[in-house]
Length: 193
Image (cartoon, rainbow, N blue to C red):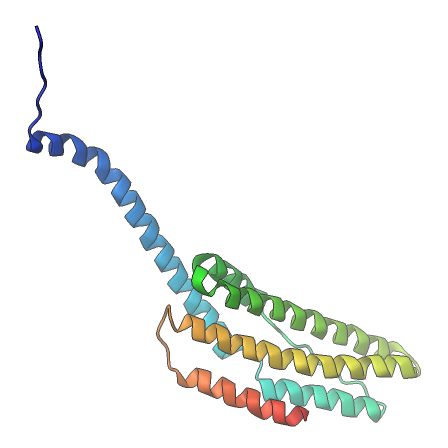
């Protein structure tokens, strides 16, 4: 009594398609959600860099004003805002866009360096403001921090250009934005020399 079970191809498809379909749909859904998240975060980072990041020549000019006022015995306190949300979104993009993750990671690092440098300058300026007489070491510390911060801001702007180039592979936007940033960087570099 040897019984052999035979299944026709249509019957096999009727059994396997319902079992495989949820897995296929799960992977398609995951891919689609990841792509949507990457595009949304890329647009947010682009908008933040283009619209809310400090204007490089204005930031360098403010640092020059601080240095000149300090030499004249006045204290000018300026706060430089480098948005934390932009670096948080860039860090997430480093996870989503693995081909360009190093670009986002470098940007995040340099933004943090610039943010910390601006915070240190603010603390030094507050110390100068409350001091009845400005000591030479404190004045030299402020001047050194201003010089370092100028370089940090230029490096940050260069990193922003690299991020914008990486974002251009994910979303579309006006390439003039990159050109304008590059020309601002080159003119800022000339001011430092």
